Image 1 (cartoon, chains in turn red, orange):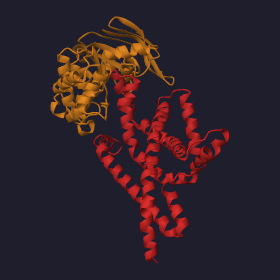
Image 2 (cartoon, rainbow over the protein chains, first blue to last red):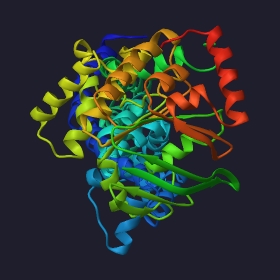
Image 3 (cartoon, rainbow over the protein chains, first blue to last red):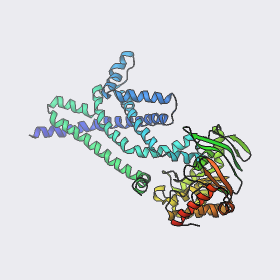
Image 4 (cartoon, rainbow over the protein chains, first blue to last red):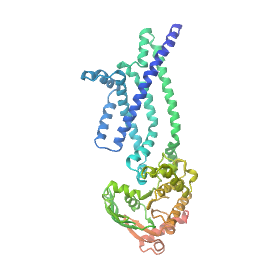
Length: 236
Length: 253
């Protein structure tokens, strides 16, 4: 099944696929995810701090972006908005949609993590004279981000793969590069498996980074574990 | 120094504090005793505004406040003069022992980091934990955590420290080391208001005892008189009960 011609196509295409992976897929992911984290932290905090008005706004934003398909969001921004005079280039349009979409999901992750921080942490902060913002910034948010780290890593890995949807709005990322080669060579099975494997490599690297990150953060996180071990229902 | 008049607090219609009066003078070590659900912890939490009392008056250093409605500014100002030690320590989990002590000094009191660390090290030395300053809370035993919490409480040089059942979450062996630190603080003249179940501590360290039940003060008096000649029948009953209990358990003092 694998003859010399196919082998040549695969080796030729490897760099042609990997290059847009390194220059488009990864930057698209990194920029979008970073923006998504900023959005998510802000949206989680206004809900956690119960700021009237902003909280409702956050709920509405999350409702919309979690409740509609990512692909449709891409189409609305790239193909729809020009009809009302808003024209955005493919790459920034993709960044906009991916960061808003991921921001909505991660906001919920971070909100849950904020709420998981024991209320005694806030009380202790008040009792040493700190104000609410200081306690959030220095005590509660760092602990919440540690709790949220695994699910957020998960979201990052998902986003790497979701960026392939940007091919639909003419972003020349890995998947689009593959499609072009398939159109020329008529080897869909081998080439789509090839690009799939490259995504797998990306995800594997991120998984390893996640593990290393968790290990580093564990010095503090042990707290939750040891608390569970020592106290709770089963200790008596 | 701290005086409370007619403090009242209800949770969902259930009255927990039904008009309690309290005076603490400088250098006093006041123990609040009473069965579970008597309102002792709520009283303490209201004094530091962790709960908002429904009504009542607080006189702190001659300044008068209405406990039902105190401005955020006044709360912040009063908290700068007080410290609180929790039953379950509530150390900042993402900070080391030293950082736990210095955090309030650096952020709330704007003390330069180096100076704060000097103060923090001194406080940790006082509670016998100099060798643990870089440990995170989960790396410390319960007794050590509570001693760090006490170091944190005294590092800010408060006028009074509130203790909310500081040894109730500890094994008997660890209770002793915490009580020893508290006794040392008392000997140095720190003003302390201590909700406790430790009869030995109340008897030997405190100079005044308040016995609460069902949201009211049943009896109050000098520690010696309170234990030797309790006036109220209910107090006698309570003391006998706890004597029996401690006879079964371990004595620390």
